[in-house]
Length: 625
Image 1 (cartoon, helix red, strand yellow):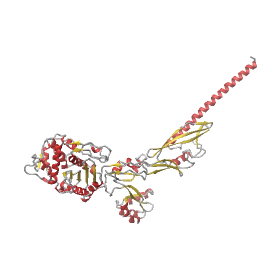
Image 2 (cartoon, one colour; image 1 turned 45 degrees about the vertical axis):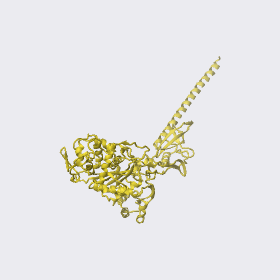
Image 3 (cartoon, rainbow, N blue to C red; image 1 turned 60 degrees about the vertical axis):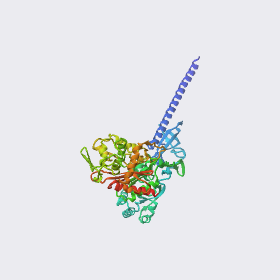
Image 4 (cartoon, rainbow, N blue to C red; image 1 turned 135 degrees about the horizontal axis):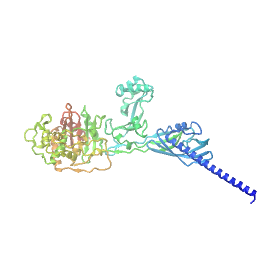
């Protein structure tokens, strides 16, 4: 090889080395550009998740502000964005974002929107599309997204025959416009509506102080009540009364407080609903309407609009009906009995179907109070002697014909017990007569022969403290509490329904229904599709109890119920002391035909004088249906 040839080959070799190094450098720089672009894309996607793009480097100013304005109409909806594959062409790159918004009610709205990036200097910037908006592929530049809701059809609370207990009706929401009204208008509105004096005036002053122009809610009327006041309301400056529809009972008090009501959600409800509710929505706010609101309310329809175009739509899902065992006729009879008794103190009437154990009615007075018929906790007094007698009979401690004296007083461990009003029955007294006249001293004389769990077991067998509170279908239902007794005064007081014994009106009706049926069946109010199994009772003891409960009405403490329309009434009175200077709780529980029931009046003279007449009104109204 000549010297020239060697030089040429050396030059060629050098050029090859230089070219190879340039290729390596070009490839390395390309990889770095790709990594930087992908990192910028990832930061862009992460910023979507926080709904704050203010820190994202954009190729043009104001993009972050435009994003905030474009999605403001979606409210509190959350969003996630996942970057897709990136393609780079020199100093530009393109990709996509897979965006998912979680709208109120956990409704997912997903779409893919393009993402474009450009390299400026030593960093990559996010650039908008050449046409349109980067926030949604069909959104025009500068357009805004808006979320609208479509109310679903609310389900019904159904009666035992499948008919709505509270069909939809028109209501008028009386409000005061703080912009147009003054204090005199507010005071006039208080007088017409009967709301608390000063309440609307105070609310108006607070609006004026805060500068809020939001209408002041005052009262909601059903149509008949609104029409009777319409002229007087129209005469007050600033009064507005938009109409709405909501479930309404037959009357203002029908089924209250058990069924509850539907109304506009409060700010607290909205805040705690995880986006399910927004201001202005209506929902169950008390009673069964509130407890079963998730089933009844359904799911609202959602529409996302851009200008006059719909970019996403989710149809509303109608609410489901909730079936109950209530009988409207029996419920009305119970409410009529309480109303006709002109009670100035709280009371309750509850009724149970003997055959099935299902609750037919649960009426509480006042209707604006709590559901004392089902959730109330009271000493049952002498109504509990039904359970005590069942214990005595099944343990062989007495029979209806056995002689059990009824003196005026009896002493146990130094404590003296007496009969109501200091009464006594002279001579040889059969136990059936002690029961009919509710002789405390006779019952207490047998009490120490019971075991410490005998009363608990007897009461549970009849349905008191039997555990059905959690299966009835009503929140906080109370099935009674009969704890194990202690020998001595505790056991003596327990057999007459005092001491630590507690019952609800419903639990006493369940007890009477068990005697009438001859088996214990857990009561049901909200139907679940399953049929409870009956548990047999001692047949002989039940037959004897039925006869003695009949004597209570025929010749004992509840003779006011003799001749009640509808047939023979069997039952037991009760007068329960509570507090030194308090009037006693008064009771009557029993059954007539296929209806078992209990009546409570929170303050009275005695079960026979105060509660039994309410029971007679109830049964009379029932017979007149």
